[in-house]
Length: 297
Image 1 (cartoon, helix red, strand yellow):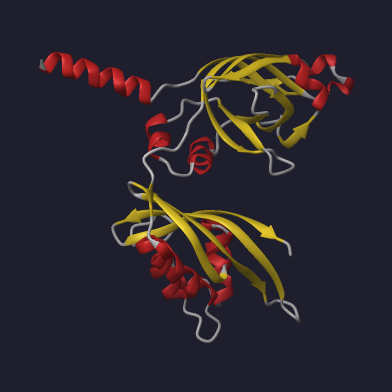
Image 2 (image 1 turned 90 degrees about the vertical axis):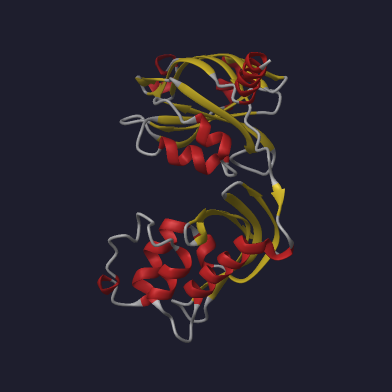
Protein backbone atom coordinates (compact mmCIF):
# COMPACT_ATOMS: atom_id res chain seq x y z
CA UNK A 1 0.00 0.00 0.00
CA UNK A 2 2.85 2.36 0.90
CA UNK A 3 4.49 1.70 -2.50
CA UNK A 4 1.25 2.56 -4.35
CA UNK A 5 0.86 5.76 -2.30
CA UNK A 6 4.44 6.78 -3.05
CA UNK A 7 3.99 6.22 -6.78
CA UNK A 8 0.76 8.25 -6.75
CA UNK A 9 2.49 11.12 -4.94
CA UNK A 10 5.29 11.17 -7.49
CA UNK A 11 2.78 11.23 -10.34
CA UNK A 12 0.85 14.10 -8.76
CA UNK A 13 4.09 16.04 -8.23
CA UNK A 14 5.01 15.54 -11.88
CA UNK A 15 1.65 16.90 -13.00
CA UNK A 16 1.87 19.89 -10.67
CA UNK A 17 5.35 20.86 -11.83
CA UNK A 18 5.10 20.18 -15.57
CA UNK A 19 7.94 22.02 -17.27
CA UNK A 20 8.52 23.44 -20.69
CA UNK A 21 9.80 21.57 -23.71
CA UNK A 22 11.63 24.17 -25.76
CA UNK A 23 14.51 23.98 -28.20
CA UNK A 24 16.23 26.21 -30.71
CA UNK A 25 17.90 29.60 -30.87
CA UNK A 26 16.93 33.23 -30.44
CA UNK A 27 18.71 36.54 -31.01
CA UNK A 28 18.97 39.51 -33.32
CA UNK A 29 21.12 40.69 -36.23
CA UNK A 30 22.69 37.25 -36.66
CA UNK A 31 23.73 36.94 -32.99
CA UNK A 32 21.90 34.07 -31.27
CA UNK A 33 21.99 31.95 -28.13
CA UNK A 34 20.63 28.47 -27.45
CA UNK A 35 17.34 28.44 -25.55
CA UNK A 36 17.30 25.78 -22.86
CA UNK A 37 14.29 26.73 -20.71
CA UNK A 38 11.08 28.74 -20.79
CA UNK A 39 8.22 29.99 -18.62
CA UNK A 40 4.78 31.08 -19.79
CA UNK A 41 2.33 33.20 -17.81
CA UNK A 42 -0.55 35.58 -18.43
CA UNK A 43 0.14 39.31 -18.32
CA UNK A 44 -0.70 42.44 -20.30
CA UNK A 45 0.33 43.40 -23.80
CA UNK A 46 3.26 45.81 -23.97
CA UNK A 47 1.33 48.76 -25.41
CA UNK A 48 -1.94 48.47 -23.52
CA UNK A 49 -4.04 46.68 -20.94
CA UNK A 50 -5.26 43.74 -23.01
CA UNK A 51 -4.47 40.26 -21.65
CA UNK A 52 -1.52 38.56 -23.32
CA UNK A 53 0.59 35.44 -22.97
CA UNK A 54 4.14 36.26 -21.92
CA UNK A 55 6.83 33.74 -22.88
CA UNK A 56 10.15 34.08 -21.07
CA UNK A 57 13.08 32.31 -22.77
CA UNK A 58 16.34 31.61 -20.99
CA UNK A 59 19.79 30.46 -22.06
CA UNK A 60 20.23 28.97 -18.58
CA UNK A 61 18.20 26.36 -16.72
CA UNK A 62 15.54 27.90 -14.48
CA UNK A 63 14.61 26.92 -10.92
CA UNK A 64 11.02 25.81 -11.48
CA UNK A 65 10.56 24.84 -7.82
CA UNK A 66 11.13 28.48 -6.87
CA UNK A 67 8.73 29.60 -9.60
CA UNK A 68 6.11 27.18 -8.23
CA UNK A 69 6.44 28.85 -4.82
CA UNK A 70 6.34 32.41 -6.18
CA UNK A 71 3.42 34.77 -5.84
CA UNK A 72 5.03 37.22 -8.28
CA UNK A 73 5.85 35.07 -11.32
CA UNK A 74 7.27 37.93 -13.37
CA UNK A 75 9.48 39.12 -10.54
CA UNK A 76 10.79 35.62 -9.80
CA UNK A 77 11.70 35.02 -13.45
CA UNK A 78 13.32 38.48 -13.60
CA UNK A 79 15.47 37.53 -10.62
CA UNK A 80 16.52 34.21 -12.13
CA UNK A 81 17.45 35.47 -15.61
CA UNK A 82 19.21 38.62 -14.40
CA UNK A 83 22.74 38.68 -15.78
CA UNK A 84 22.26 35.86 -18.31
CA UNK A 85 21.03 35.96 -21.93
CA UNK A 86 17.25 35.89 -22.13
CA UNK A 87 14.32 37.06 -24.22
CA UNK A 88 10.62 37.76 -23.87
CA UNK A 89 8.01 37.13 -26.58
CA UNK A 90 4.41 38.32 -26.46
CA UNK A 91 1.49 36.24 -27.72
CA UNK A 92 -2.22 36.88 -28.07
CA UNK A 93 -4.52 34.77 -25.94
CA UNK A 94 -5.15 32.37 -28.85
CA UNK A 95 -1.39 31.66 -28.98
CA UNK A 96 -0.58 33.69 -32.07
CA UNK A 97 2.63 35.73 -31.83
CA UNK A 98 2.19 39.51 -31.83
CA UNK A 99 5.57 40.03 -33.51
CA UNK A 100 6.88 41.76 -30.37
CA UNK A 101 9.61 40.89 -27.97
CA UNK A 102 12.43 42.04 -25.74
CA UNK A 103 15.95 40.69 -26.27
CA UNK A 104 18.61 40.81 -23.56
CA UNK A 105 21.50 39.19 -25.36
CA UNK A 106 25.07 40.54 -25.60
CA UNK A 107 25.55 42.50 -28.84
CA UNK A 108 21.93 41.82 -29.80
CA UNK A 109 19.81 43.60 -27.19
CA UNK A 110 16.55 45.44 -27.76
CA UNK A 111 14.36 46.53 -24.85
CA UNK A 112 11.25 46.06 -26.99
CA UNK A 113 11.08 45.47 -30.74
CA UNK A 114 7.79 45.15 -32.58
CA UNK A 115 6.99 44.17 -36.15
CA UNK A 116 3.46 42.88 -36.64
CA UNK A 117 4.32 41.53 -40.08
CA UNK A 118 6.64 38.96 -38.48
CA UNK A 119 3.73 37.35 -36.63
CA UNK A 120 2.91 35.39 -39.78
CA UNK A 121 6.20 33.51 -39.41
CA UNK A 122 4.97 31.89 -36.22
CA UNK A 123 2.88 28.73 -36.34
CA UNK A 124 1.78 28.66 -32.72
CA UNK A 125 -1.42 28.05 -30.79
CA UNK A 126 -2.63 28.06 -27.17
CA UNK A 127 -4.92 25.19 -26.27
CA UNK A 128 -5.57 23.38 -23.00
CA UNK A 129 -3.13 25.66 -21.16
CA UNK A 130 -0.29 24.77 -23.55
CA UNK A 131 1.53 27.07 -25.98
CA UNK A 132 2.90 24.97 -28.82
CA UNK A 133 4.27 25.30 -32.32
CA UNK A 134 7.24 26.82 -34.12
CA UNK A 135 8.66 30.25 -34.91
CA UNK A 136 11.18 30.74 -37.71
CA UNK A 137 12.49 34.24 -38.50
CA UNK A 138 15.83 35.20 -40.07
CA UNK A 139 17.19 38.74 -39.88
CA UNK A 140 19.09 38.10 -43.12
CA UNK A 141 15.79 38.11 -45.00
CA UNK A 142 14.61 41.38 -43.43
CA UNK A 143 15.32 44.95 -44.55
CA UNK A 144 18.85 46.01 -43.59
CA UNK A 145 19.24 42.73 -41.69
CA UNK A 146 17.88 44.52 -38.63
CA UNK A 147 15.52 42.18 -36.86
CA UNK A 148 15.16 39.01 -34.83
CA UNK A 149 16.64 35.61 -35.50
CA UNK A 150 14.32 32.98 -34.09
CA UNK A 151 14.23 29.24 -34.68
CA UNK A 152 12.14 27.73 -31.90
CA UNK A 153 10.03 24.68 -31.25
CA UNK A 154 7.71 25.18 -28.29
CA UNK A 155 5.56 23.10 -25.98
CA UNK A 156 5.22 25.28 -22.90
CA UNK A 157 2.50 24.92 -20.24
CA UNK A 158 1.20 28.08 -18.60
CA UNK A 159 2.09 28.87 -15.01
CA UNK A 160 -0.74 29.99 -12.75
CA UNK A 161 -0.33 31.07 -9.14
CA UNK A 162 -2.20 28.65 -6.88
CA UNK A 163 -2.57 28.14 -3.14
CA UNK A 164 -3.44 31.77 -2.39
CA UNK A 165 -5.05 32.92 0.86
CA UNK A 166 -6.85 36.26 1.12
CA UNK A 167 -5.43 38.64 3.71
CA UNK A 168 -7.74 40.51 6.10
CA UNK A 169 -8.78 44.10 5.48
CA UNK A 170 -5.73 46.35 5.57
CA UNK A 171 -3.40 43.53 4.55
CA UNK A 172 -2.81 42.00 7.98
CA UNK A 173 0.81 41.74 9.12
CA UNK A 174 2.22 42.22 5.58
CA UNK A 175 0.13 45.39 5.29
CA UNK A 176 1.36 46.79 8.60
CA UNK A 177 4.98 46.08 7.68
CA UNK A 178 4.57 47.73 4.30
CA UNK A 179 3.04 50.85 5.82
CA UNK A 180 5.90 51.05 8.34
CA UNK A 181 8.41 51.02 5.46
CA UNK A 182 6.63 53.71 3.46
CA UNK A 183 6.19 55.85 6.57
CA UNK A 184 9.93 55.72 7.25
CA UNK A 185 10.78 56.45 3.62
CA UNK A 186 8.46 59.45 3.32
CA UNK A 187 8.92 61.00 6.76
CA UNK A 188 9.31 64.76 6.34
CA UNK A 189 9.48 66.18 9.87
CA UNK A 190 12.26 63.97 11.24
CA UNK A 191 13.69 61.73 8.49
CA UNK A 192 15.69 58.90 10.02
CA UNK A 193 18.08 56.78 7.94
CA UNK A 194 18.30 54.03 10.56
CA UNK A 195 14.50 53.83 10.73
CA UNK A 196 14.37 53.17 6.98
CA UNK A 197 16.81 50.29 7.23
CA UNK A 198 14.97 48.80 10.21
CA UNK A 199 11.49 49.07 8.69
CA UNK A 200 12.29 48.10 5.11
CA UNK A 201 15.00 45.44 5.41
CA UNK A 202 15.72 42.34 7.48
CA UNK A 203 18.95 42.46 9.47
CA UNK A 204 20.49 39.70 7.35
CA UNK A 205 19.43 41.18 4.01
CA UNK A 206 22.41 41.10 1.65
CA UNK A 207 21.86 44.76 0.75
CA UNK A 208 22.33 45.99 4.32
CA UNK A 209 24.75 43.51 5.90
CA UNK A 210 27.79 45.65 5.12
CA UNK A 211 25.94 48.95 4.76
CA UNK A 212 27.62 52.01 6.23
CA UNK A 213 24.95 54.64 6.90
CA UNK A 214 27.64 57.29 7.39
CA UNK A 215 28.42 57.02 3.69
CA UNK A 216 25.02 58.58 2.96
CA UNK A 217 25.40 62.14 4.19
CA UNK A 218 21.73 63.03 3.86
CA UNK A 219 18.46 61.17 4.06
CA UNK A 220 17.88 61.81 0.35
CA UNK A 221 21.23 60.19 -0.46
CA UNK A 222 19.97 56.97 1.12
CA UNK A 223 16.43 57.15 -0.24
CA UNK A 224 17.59 56.96 -3.86
CA UNK A 225 19.35 53.55 -3.68
CA UNK A 226 16.61 52.16 -1.43
CA UNK A 227 14.07 53.10 -4.10
CA UNK A 228 16.13 51.30 -6.74
CA UNK A 229 16.40 48.24 -4.49
CA UNK A 230 12.73 48.01 -3.44
CA UNK A 231 10.88 49.83 -6.21
CA UNK A 232 8.64 52.86 -6.31
CA UNK A 233 6.25 51.23 -3.87
CA UNK A 234 8.62 52.26 -1.09
CA UNK A 235 7.88 55.93 -1.83
CA UNK A 236 4.08 55.91 -1.75
CA UNK A 237 2.30 58.41 0.47
CA UNK A 238 -1.34 58.41 1.59
CA UNK A 239 -1.34 54.67 0.96
CA UNK A 240 -4.57 52.71 0.71
CA UNK A 241 -4.34 48.92 0.81
CA UNK A 242 -7.19 47.69 -1.34
CA UNK A 243 -6.69 43.94 -0.97
CA UNK A 244 -4.02 41.36 -0.29
CA UNK A 245 -3.14 37.72 -0.79
CA UNK A 246 -0.58 35.39 0.73
CA UNK A 247 1.15 32.21 -0.37
CA UNK A 248 3.51 30.63 2.12
CA UNK A 249 6.19 33.19 2.90
CA UNK A 250 5.17 35.52 0.07
CA UNK A 251 2.47 38.20 0.00
CA UNK A 252 1.10 40.71 -2.49
CA UNK A 253 -0.89 43.83 -1.75
CA UNK A 254 -3.05 45.81 -4.16
CA UNK A 255 -2.34 49.43 -3.25
CA UNK A 256 -2.85 52.99 -4.36
CA UNK A 257 -1.26 56.22 -3.24
CA UNK A 258 0.85 59.08 -4.50
CA UNK A 259 4.51 59.81 -5.12
CA UNK A 260 5.51 63.38 -4.32
CA UNK A 261 8.61 64.99 -5.84
CA UNK A 262 9.57 67.88 -3.58
CA UNK A 263 12.68 68.85 -5.52
CA UNK A 264 10.70 71.55 -7.32
CA UNK A 265 8.21 74.20 -6.28
CA UNK A 266 5.38 73.48 -6.28
CA UNK A 267 5.95 69.76 -5.69
CA UNK A 268 4.80 67.41 -8.44
CA UNK A 269 2.39 64.63 -7.50
CA UNK A 270 1.78 61.35 -9.33
CA UNK A 271 -1.07 59.07 -8.36
CA UNK A 272 -0.01 55.42 -8.48
CA UNK A 273 -1.80 52.10 -8.32
CA UNK A 274 -0.65 48.50 -8.56
CA UNK A 275 0.92 45.72 -6.53
CA UNK A 276 3.70 45.51 -3.99
CA UNK A 277 5.32 42.21 -3.01
CA UNK A 278 6.66 41.19 0.38
CA UNK A 279 8.54 38.22 1.85
CA UNK A 280 8.48 36.83 5.38
CA UNK A 281 11.94 37.11 6.97
CA UNK A 282 13.34 36.41 10.40
CA UNK A 283 12.45 40.00 11.29
CA UNK A 284 8.92 39.87 9.91
CA UNK A 285 7.46 40.83 6.55
CA UNK A 286 9.63 43.04 4.37
CA UNK A 287 9.04 44.78 1.05
CA UNK A 288 10.74 43.12 -1.92
CA UNK A 289 9.46 44.82 -5.07
CA UNK A 290 6.60 46.75 -6.64
CA UNK A 291 4.77 47.00 -9.92
CA UNK A 292 2.92 50.31 -10.11
CA UNK A 293 1.36 52.38 -12.86
CA UNK A 294 0.54 56.05 -12.91
CA UNK A 295 -3.17 56.76 -12.63
CA UNK A 296 -4.71 59.72 -14.41
CA UNK A 297 -7.98 61.39 -13.47
